Length: 155
Image 1: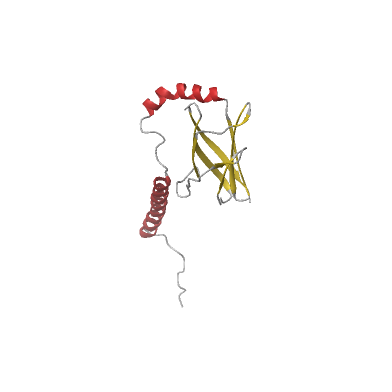
Image 2: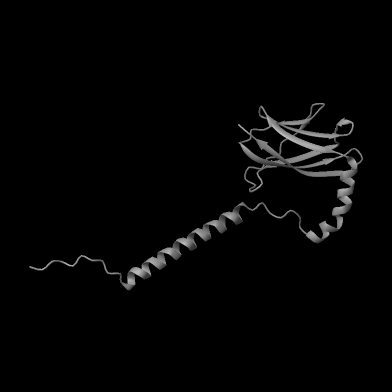
């Protein structure tokens, strides 16, 4: 009577299958991650960075001369954007803002802010997490004030 040989023998095709499977997984994950990175990239900040850099110091000096500070919060379904100077709340000539996530543009919205005498406010339902308010305000003298204000929403 003979006993059957039940020991496993590693053959060349086993090794080849393992290597091909491992590299297939790695390549699949890399392609997926690259496509997600490209698909969620919000785009360029400026068309020509050299031209933008030539005007940067002038624009910064004009904005700093206004002496404005900006603060944002979210309570009760309302986004409050507070623009103040040394004399208190500031009423601007024009205000445009985009509220969205830092990493994608899918959630971007452009709320219409109304001045209530103290702050600018707009109704907006936001999920928890970090949001960016990319705002452009125009002062009464025509100076453009551009800021990115971080808004933390907790629920």
